[in-house]
Length: 204
Image 1 (tube, rainbow, N blue to C red):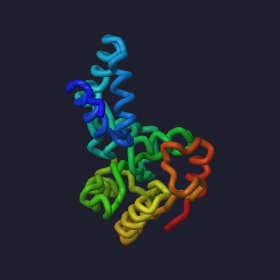
Image 2 (spheres, rainbow, N blue to C red; image 1 turned 30 degrees about the horizontal axis):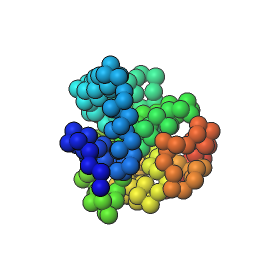
Image 3 (spheres, one colour; image 1 turned 135 degrees about the vertical axis):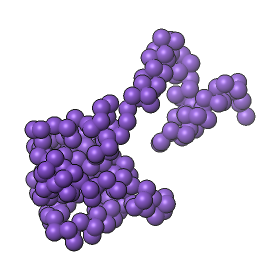
Image 4 (tube, helix red, strand yellow; image 1 turned 45 degrees about the horizontal axis):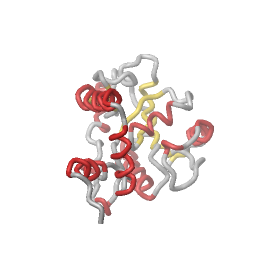
């Protein structure tokens, strides 16, 4: 069996820790980096460090941001009476691409998954309930919470759990329509399909 020099082996092992990167992909990336000019590698390192140093979670909605609160939560032109709950920041971007949603967001950073030991306490849910009170929402009463979790088993379980939490409060709780293939991620849905899904949401 071919053995690489220790630094190469270390790099491959670290790359394998990344999501969806297996041994062969890690190996290809490692050799790509070795062929890449130092200046390009330095730009990648700088970009990674900047993300770690400058990006924080919005204390209101948990979105990734450089300023707190984020631009959505601090915007006076957004409708703060409607909150759209999504699993990940890239799901928020998918909704924004439609340019039809004018409300604000709440990012969970995951979904319920007993198999992966992810329960309600592992999701960013704690700061959702306080937002529903006008005194914590710039004096605006929340009229609707849209559950835009992914159309997967975990996403459905998460939507049902949040719905059970919110329904007793007398809020209108809606679920985006399934205008997209079941099992897909919002990140990969085109703008038209996402727009239809939002327009055809239903109460649960």
